[in-house]
Structures are given as C-alpha cells and as structure tokens.
Length: 109
Image 1 (cartoon, rainbow, N blue to C red):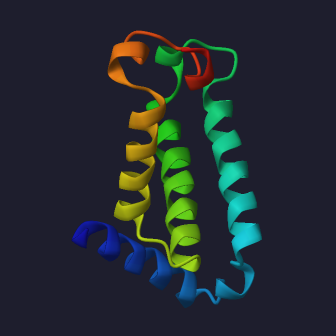
Image 2 (cartoon, rainbow, N blue to C red):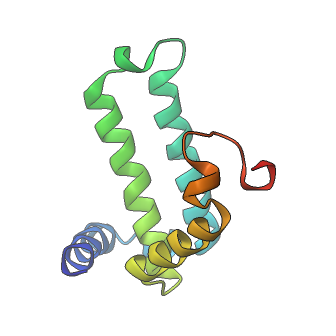
C-alpha cells in the first residue's frame, strides 16, 4: 500500500533525525508497543468508553500504530500481506455460520 509505505518513511525519518534507530531492535520495539498499548488502556481506566478523552485516545493509538509499523519494518514484513494472511486464517477459525454474533473463542464454537 502506497500510503503505508509513505507513513513508514515519515516515521523512519523522525527516528533517524534523532539517531534513535540504535535503540529500535525488535525486542525493544515489541516492548514499546506493549507499553503504549497499556497507555491506551489507561485512557479508558475507571470510566465507560464514551468518557475517554478522544484526544488522548488519538495520541496513544498513534503511538501504538507507529511502534507496530516500526516493528514490521524492522522485521521486513509487508503490512498488507500479514494482515491479509491473518484475515484468511481468522476466516477459517471463525466461520460466519458459527461465529456470527458470538464472542466465543474459535475452540469454543
């Protein structure tokens, strides 16, 4: 996807301008991704979903997405391909006729 590649290039430029690539090994990117996901969760802590500050949700979600893109880039993964592969797998695990309207895990359907 052209937009994804352009976005990854902007993120890499931001990183490289600050000489942060040295800190961005796969392990630390995965850790940062997890930490940012926890910060996103914190925005919703102790309130209903509608009460979360939309600006904070945007900022934390952007951090999650940027680290995910950096990790994919570091691992040489094609975002479109890995998402399509996972959708195909999930389609097999969660066939519509069994999963529609259900929150059960695939092994409980």
